[in-house]
Image: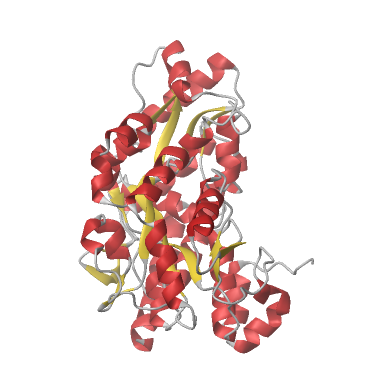
Length: 438
């Protein structure tokens, strides 16, 4: 069935009317992206985006084989997290979602919990102290725990170690200036199409990238000590977006990154067409799959993101399990979540999917540390350097503004100065509206 496509901004304008917004999108939007029939009996429906690593379908199959009481139906949702979020919110507003367990982004709990869409798991989640503090903190809203972490994420710099060495570079870049130098020289030496690729599209991944440029130059969006205070209009934020824009102007990257999301950027890198890539830990797993990658793990190094006047900082990502508050199968949902977040399943996800585990004990597992370089980096660097995106009950609106202004700055349609000035005004208004509504 062909569906009308709405941008996220168009969705929010239309969807603000609740049921009317859902009706505008049409009944097809309520069916979920993956098709999937309603689960019969005690079976449950589980939603998640596409899994390029193939680990998730195998785990669901393993659960279903050992489960005697019920089965799990996997409903595949859009890979764009903004579209996925909007689709879920439409279903919730219409009271029409038959999804029992939601695989969701680390930024969703405050927005969904504040509207009563997902269940408080505090009474069930009795071993939360065994999980990493960062991912756990993201699951809390007011006095409750509204999700269970499955894996954590942070932005990483992948680089062609073999090609850098051939071009005379013994170490990956520590600064953005060094990245430009290495990308341009190595690209020219090897005749590659690109020096550096990343996610510059107008969507949530573009927000993460833009924030990383601001943070690594010493700037911020909201005051960490007072989230109601917007601080994005600063020389440091301007410097960060200026550096990002200069990557196109200096020839280190291509204007194509203005549309790049995760798939386009990792595809360019694993085909061997780029020297550097900014992406999430999952990419390392693709390197071992000859159907996905033309380069081998031994040719690739992984490093923290460069800095320029600030400290290395990566956007905290990660995916988690939420329970639909309206589900009548919450006991079955919890049984599935418990099984999926046991050390055995988390270890499989790390070894085969290069996804950083969320249980503390697994960072002492030598097999994981030996076989998954991103986990070693996670233990030593990522956990300390990862930073949450602005925490706000109006984050979806805040995200829209950042996505638009970051992309416009990168494209040269707005100067970095104008971009952060506009964000200062618009985010301040959104935060005030959120406080008034609360």
